[in-house]
Image (tube, rainbow, N blue to C red; front, top):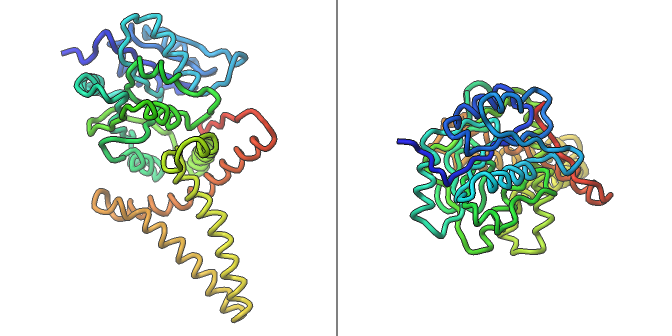
Length: 344
């Protein structure tokens, strides 16, 4: 049975994905006539790869707008509207992901029987999750709870009508554009769902600390940007990245101020021993929070993996804080938002 319908179009976006893009396109090749590949100024021949496999290619002009995922997805959607007059659903997929062969039929069936749902996503898995610590961390990150959700990621199936009425992705956001769109959709009264079905297999290509840290800096920049955009417009509980931003500031600025205070007070009261006591107390609080971050994973993954995830959740606060600081600096100086890439 063909899992696709003529009413569903696909938008694949990419920038210098190379072999990852080839795997992505092959996973949806049977639907290539209802799919668009949007390229963001690649220099590795990505557009030629897509054309050779029979896909319609849209190349973004770097001189006519920002080069980001939001603009690429919008451009793909507008192209699909011209190609498919009866377009009902759009499957967005990042070029470093492979689509599960059963996903679209599963998602279509859900939307067909749940008219109040505007978008659905499923389980994203990390390819070669055991290849490195960082791919393992990504796989744990993707394993989010199923059910009604507030936000989705880059891979999602959305009703075309709802997407058009929402205005699409905000092209001024270099990252963090998905939670922004999700909030605007929810404000119209619809729901978003995460299903237990497999959706995509992702290839992060993160094999070292430097690349991981750059990814976190990019995330902090986008989170801060979207948080500041919405924080005075909707209730705090609905602000995208609200918890992440507050937690980042608490466990960087707040923790550092607390640690210095304990060290200074300890030193003034008991000299060097007091300094050691203050430092030890600060580190103990930090480790306790890392264990707390890992607690919700207890039983679902090996204990050591949960512990490492907790540790890196806390370590990640610092590059997130750098990203947020870069955003605030750009906002203070009225600069154009930067598009921070963590891949070459």
